[in-house]
Image (cartoon, rainbow, N blue to C red; front, side):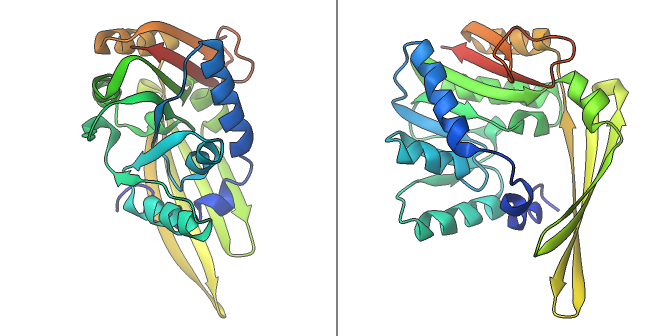
Length: 246
């Protein structure tokens, strides 16, 4: 089963605590700090389009790319409901093949952690660099090693909404800072529940390794922050925010 095929239909309902409006404002303020005009903007791993729509509403010329056809199907329906004119493309980020270059690329909510190991992340960085205009800015976040080891770890979470009951189980693998995530969905249909399942892995990397991979791709002006406070990352940082320039 492909990643985020079943999860796509419950994603917005279960990941309800993300403030996409605040995220869009923050990203644009970071671009202002670097005196960079957004220009043509790519929302990479856009999922169901929530950040894409917020950027579009702020006048940004943005389009979305995601590897999950199911996630994009949800995004397309939401765009139609809101009468928003936005382009969505179904592509893997490590095999990106665009019609031209962008001025800005965002890749948020630990999407790069989902790639299967450092070699795949390197391919994604190479592709972003290739399809970024000179002077362009790449901003992304990633879960840190600390979060995988001590927060996600081997924990189990249970979520219940009006439409679905979800059991989220993590298994931490120290060798490669990987968290195996197994999801069980129970959707009520009349007097019975329909069960569906999905599994995927997330890999975490040290800030120094991320920096080296970006440099190898050709990026310059690389800065890595604690995503919570935009200060230098600490050993206890749970999420990193990275700004790289071409």
